[in-house]
Image (cartoon, rainbow, N blue to C red):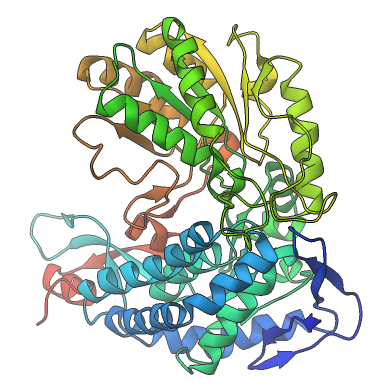
Length: 520
């Protein structure tokens, strides 16, 4: 059985006590153990501040981009090994494991390419400059400079590769060293990713450190120039934000939390490409990664006159999903990742069933194809239906982090659809499917303020649309309210969290040379 290690202060640390088990969610067999016992977190931060930070800040964007390019290459070259670890530790099918791993290497690669275009300069001009006096002898320009602290990344269990890489890409390109802390239950993939990167000798000492296990007093040692990026539950996020030292120091905190994402079918969608895209996307976003995605569809809003037709079509497609051990080639959806996730899913479905009725699935644990009876954390795709969307309060409050969604009717107007979406009190993504632009415009006006991203499926996008669940590095990932109020990815949006915005003032030519806007 493997003992996971932490990579801290330039060396690998193996704990001697305090271990937590990692299991194969298809078999419930323990495959590894992890603990951070004995890690000196004060030394971890000091190592990052004195070694990694100065090294990264001394590089240009082109040089930092080169680090990301090589890091992406290492993950791609070891893809098959990482896919197998993902299957064993997180229960992913090969396509679902690839979604995580290719998302990781792809995000690193995109930021590498974009970073090269930022040029041979350590700072980033932010917006247009402004004349501040009667002449250009006094000019103002906002500039983003790397923060002289440490970025601590606390990631969720569902994306052990992508969650690590998307935060690391932004932090490293911005010039800020990082300490990454994966969820212990699925840390096998993250540990191997970091092991491969360290072995390749890509990054300067102190630029990347890994903690497998608990965080000890790490978060209590963060200060005013440090940042904390957290992905996980809203309850845990609230406790983190309330830590005395984070409030006293005004440590920057970015949160990605719960999200009751909605998929909305516009009226008069017919049976063409738009309707087909809607069915394909909703089915995938319910079942990909066994529904364990922060961007998964949880609420499906359709015109009341269309609800029976949509229900029949979705039930037919969900009925084709084969739930079981991904080691069986016939399986198309694996288990949820942990026993706790299974218990929460079953409890959550029961809560939803108080306001909605099951139309597909059992609402209970099931035996998986290719798995030993009674073993494994399996739950089949589950569709519920509530005929009074406004009375189904729990559906708009309770996120079940599993292949579970609820079908809800609306009256066909953009205003009604938007107001129902808003009951989720903040989403990462809302998807809407339709071709009538005045209706879409009305919906965007009503729902846009409640979501971080709006994905529009239409006849024109059907050939290229990748699905609402993919967080692309070019676009914002984050959302208001329940979703955490955070902002990740999105090009410079993702970098800004790790950089300090400075108002640079002086003679225009000098200011623009310092900001990297002029070569001479």
